[in-house]
Length: 316
Ligand SMILES: Nc1nc2c(ncn2[C@@H]2O[C@H](COP(=O)(O)OP(=O)(O)OP(=O)(O)O)[C@@H](O)[C@H]2O)c(=O)[nH]1
Ligand SMILES: [Mg+2]
Ligand SMILES: [Zn+2]
Image 1 (tube, rainbow, N blue to C red):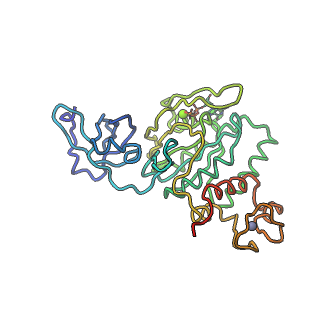
Image 2: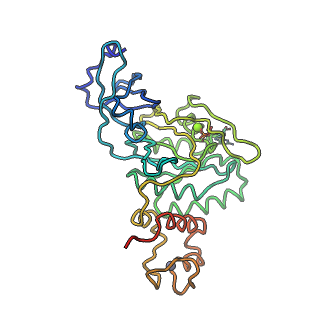
Image 3: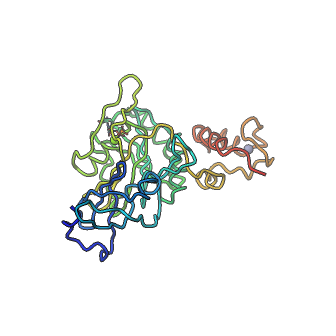
């Protein structure tokens, strides 16, 4: 009940934060930690998947005999967004006001997906937060596979991206990751079944979030988490669990963004301005040279080519 709120909302220095959403309604965390069910104003409800997301700071209006109303969303400092799968012109915000995005991929079952990592790096850069690569289920790797994975991840470390190898089964890497999240608002992005909710539970030290099985046949997850939800971490900080993504469309993708996320694929040294970086001989293409000299990972090159194709030719 709105009148039961004991806090004087306008006087608080830290505003209420959105925890989770459903149609026309949301759960909000008050600064004292209380959770309250709220309704969204009609204006916000009409555009809620763009306008309101977990992590958003909001202004509430108290009402007699009705749940508090969210009447305003305060300006965001960062977002994690994607285009609406049904209508790519619409921005869908998965999480707001985040410091870190944990890009989660499992080492095995399902297999490590560098393509998802590279696409997510673009999304994180576009939304003004910082990426952290988290590879889960490393307990499933034999030493040889583990060494190959470490070698693959070294490239990201050299680019300055923080990388964690973790297992919620034997606890490897959990404490180090927990330290990185202290005092921050973080979210996770990754395919279904890679262990995002298991990671949240391990970081919280409790079984709060539902965890699903991975299908035996294709190793894919079952979309256990169905909506994004903000959780408080014991050491201070928040983690927003999200549903698994299928294909990861990119919001705001353009050439400048691509250059920022792929500094290891510089096209300025190619001989011709219209180089396609595909059929050209190595003498003419800096990217092809980087590939054959092992400076550019093949998977990263393939993702980059696909992103270039998604951007399309320059408009003259
Ligand atoms: N061996 C191993 N299995 C793990 C680990 N972490 C998670 N799993 C298992 O992976 C499966 C999927 O875990 P979830 O945490 O539900 O995955 P999710 O990413 O949240 O999946 P969605 O909610 O569907 O997006 C479960 O069977 C977990 O027990 C790990 O570190 N090692
Ligand atoms: Mg989940
Ligand atoms: Zn080239």
